[in-house]
Each structure stands twice: as C-alpha cells, then as structure tokens.
Length: 449
Image (cartoon, rainbow, N blue to C red; front, top):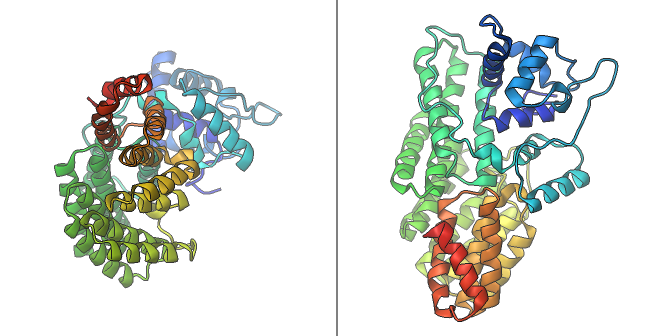
C-alpha cells in the first residue's frame, strides 16, 4: 500500500483529528507528548518509526512509545490500530469527538456498504470536534533548516497535505481552512527558498505551491474573503502561465469563473471559462474537466439571462460528463459527481427564473449527494430553499433551510452557504404568521445575522 493510502486508518484518522497533516508533524507531536509524560527531554519518535505505525498491521509499540501515544491521543495503542502481540489488529469502536447523530449513523452505514475506510473516508470519521481547534497549523512558516535536503518522501507528504485540505473543504467548508492552508503555503515557499533539492524536486515543489495557492483562493472564496481570494487566484494563474502549467491554469480559471458569478461579473465568468477551455485543450484534458468548464460557462450565461447559450453549455457539460472518468482525471475535479452537476444545472435554472425546474433539480441533487461533500450539499439545500420560496412553496422552503442548518450545526462552516441562507431568511419574513416559519427564521438568524 502506498504512502497516499495508509494501512492503519485508525491512527491516520487520529492524526488528522489533531491537525497533524504530515507524518513529520505527528512524530514531532508524539515526541513532545512523550517528553512531558516520561519527563525526558531526550525522548524522540522519529519519522521512520511513525511511518511503520501507519503501515498495515503495525507491531505493538514498545512501552515508552505506548505511553507517548496515550499522552498524544488520549487513547491506548489498542484503539489506534496496533497489533497485539501474537494477535490481529484490535478494532474497537472509536470516538474522535461529538458527532452529530445523523453524521455518525450515515458514516457507519457507508462503511458497511463499501468496506474498510479509505483515506477520504477516514477524514469523514474525524467528526466536528476535530475542527474545533483550527487553525491547526502554525500561523508562521516552519523554517527550513539551512540546506535541509528535500526528497521523494517530503514531496509525497506535501502532496498528501494539499489533498487532505481539499477533502476537508468538501466536508466542512473553507471558513476553518484558509488560515491553515496559508500556513502550509508559506511553509512550502520557505522550503523552495531555503532547502536543498534537485531540479525535478524543485519543479514539484513549485507545482505543489501553485496547487495550494489556488486551493487557498477557493477556501477564501468560500469564507467570503473575496478580495484575498482574487489575489490568490491571480497569483496561482501567474505561476501557471510562467511555468507553462496548463492543468493549474485550467483549475484556477475554473475557480475564478465560479467566483465571478457570485461577484456579479457573469461576462467575466464566461471569459474565464473559455480561456480555461483553451488551456485544457493544451493538455488534452479528460472529459470530466471539460464538463466542469462547460458548466462554469453555463453559470455565467445563466446569470446573464442568456437562456440559449446557457442551455447549450449545459448540454455540453452533460455530454462530457457522460463519457465517464479516466485515470487522467486530476484530483481537483473529483468533486464533480452527478449530484454536483445536477445542482449546478439547478443553480443555472434558478438564475434564469425557471423556479419549478430549479426546485426539481436541486431536490434531486440533495438526495444524491454523498456525505463526503456535505458543504456542496449544504449549498444545494440553501439554493433549493430559495428556489422553493420563489416558487411560493413555503413548506419546501422551510424543510430545505432546516436541513441545511442541520449540516451547519454538524460542523460545516461555509460563509458562502450562510450568505445564501440569509437571503432565504430575509424573504421568509413575509410569512412570519406561520409558527414553523418563525422557528426557522429564528434559527437562521442565529447563524446568519
């Protein structure tokens, strides 16, 4: 099993719950905990040892290591996936924090259907409490020791951290991530400036920096820090153009197109989507990327009120989507499942004023969306609530708003989602005579006022 998919999922999930995105950070954190509990400044857990612990069926740790693990994670080795001497891994029911009831049940059902947790599913088991201590990373970059050598292991850790940030964004939103992502980006730039590495490693470091930069722009966008988002998107695009990195340019322009719609700049959104399509052609992007760019173009046309152009772009999006996935699909397009594409079409119909059609599409998307994409489901429900209100269906408006609130109460933190719900709250005031509406508006006010 490769480094990207740890065998010991229990220890991996516990690590993420502590905010230790890299194995190096986990080794350092456990070392610190061990020094305190063992009263020994000499105690250390090196990275090589920790890597063995995240491998499949790790051997039982020696006594001092076991004490350090208990101190670091508040649970013993048997609850962290270690193998008892002469036995098989002990797999107890583990709680990483106060889940919302619906989340814990749904996660368990998912595991029953799909088998053992994979890397992305392990992120889902972290629970709401794991996010409570964010930002997880130091606000200042970790200074690279003069001449420190960066090799394959360090590159893989940095890539895994970037992927984990994107996965957590899909579940919990950008409000809790942008500071951590900024700290990680500063760390990568510090390595670029001060570490020692070969030419290939240097190219990979710059690629990781570019991916983190556009991710940071997206997290700021989701957190309603729009000026900062545009700065990071511009920086990522400059990096992509200067380095000839067409995939990075494609991804960044797709993000910029989405933001432009929300900023009331639909013509700019269409332009960005078209430029992204030109960059995508340069690297023969797979169909799923083409589908994303087509629906981004459709969103621009929808906000412009150009129904024929919007409908044509939607058709192209579904045609590309229908060609399926490939092994060339980049990680950043994996969010575009059927539920998401249905939701984005629903948003286009909402902008065009096709409220009844928008309600049908958004309702279908909410039913289809996986819990790993809770932030996107929350956005879909907020749009559904607004579309139903425009369609004069107050009952459906209230039901969708309450379901979106449930996700927020379960730990999803997206200022963009809250802004959409605030529009629902404003429109619902005309129906305050209904008790259920009053209750819903009061709950909405608590999160969006």
